[in-house]
Amino acid sequence: MTETAVEVVVGTGSGRVRGRISDGVAVFLGIPYAAAPFGEHRFAPPAPVPAWDGVRDALAYGPTAPKAPFPPPLDRLLSDPDIPGEECLNLNVWAPAGATGRPVMVWIHGGSLRNGSNSLPTYDGRHFARDGVVLVSINYRLGIEGFGVFPDAPGNLGLRDQLAALGWVRDNIAAFGGDPGNVTVFGESAGSISIGALLTSPYAQGLFRRAVLQSGAPTAQQPEAAGRSTRMIAKRLKIPATAAAFAAVPPERLLATQVAITKGGPPLGNGNGFTLSVDGDVLPRDPMVALHEGAGADVELLLGYNAEEYRLWFVPSGLVDRINRLTLRLALAKFRVRARTARVYRAARPEASPGELLGVIATDRLLRLPLNRLADFRLPHRTWLYEFAWPSPMERLGACHALEIGFVFDTLDSPEGLPLAGPNPPQSLADDMHRAWVDFATTGDPGWPAWDATRPVMRFDAPDSRVVHAPNDPELNAWS
Image 1 (cartoon, rainbow, N blue to C red):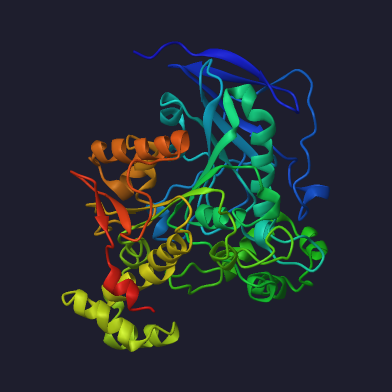
Image 2: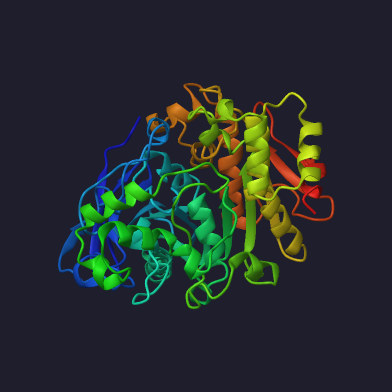
């Protein structure tokens, strides 16, 4: 039986906020952590929130960053709420009512750096709070507004937003019952890529103790390459590729132009999109190189991927069936996959179609291989690896990209998860994954051996999850 919700007021550095307590969980939604990034703050680093008098309601999700819907066919598989308003740099808090000194987890959503928000019901943090964790989910600027590359503006504004949100957590989370000295940041896809960068940023030092990277390997480009979409948008708008010129364009027109030039592609990198840029400031160098050389060594890491990441892009679009042997050879040549490497994959999967073979190679090239290598470089440090292997029964999706999120949050009852996971996903698997994430944030141990020379990987599956050693190593070694 659900108890009647009661209001609760908490003080922050900018003013007091009103939330609700229900079933022992205090919920605060839409709290601004930085000023609205419009007007004088557009294409500028996040600015402090203007203080307010009285008590501000934090009872509903706040505005989302400007974005377009996911393109077909992803739009029928991935929900992406759109809430109007300018105060899009906001966050949500779920906390055990009346608790103090609890571990904190901060969620950074994915969406190719141009979609997503903290208001997706799958990201509801009640079950983390139920299990003693203070859960924070954040918004950040997306697309050209957050990751445009300009000569007259700082780079990686969306990443700077994430840093500002983590600074808010450091300064304010104790008032909500959290321990600012025990923060775990976790994210999926673009959120995971962002965390990989944060691990190497000088501005992130001391902001978190642990990190979880789900289906996103650390990566960034040099400004010239990262600015390609910026220049294409400027050319179509017939304006200089400067922040000053872009700031004069209404957000709606800018977003429409962005959609016209950024066509989402399969995970081998086709299409024009947005990436993090090595800006020499918030991101001084390539994050993977920095991590291999010891950056982030003091942060405990949980790294993982889904067994069939590629199927989210290849299967619903029909691409998996359109790829033939010639297309496969051309794609492998384009992305410089050596013939010897491809032969190992073919031998291991003699029944795979050309499209399936390309998808497996893409998954390994972009995720499994770099995350395994990162774990190898961190052997002296505390690192854990997982693989999500449960295959969805929906539309031949298998263990595809983003499928694991509802299991991590234990929100399988959310209708938004139905298109990916189907009507009866295994609750036991959610119990296993959610508990591992809670335990990692609480104690630094997710429940299986840390990475060592035996290469242990927790394979999450149903009906049983178990540790496997050196899975897929023949394929991974073929890249050497």
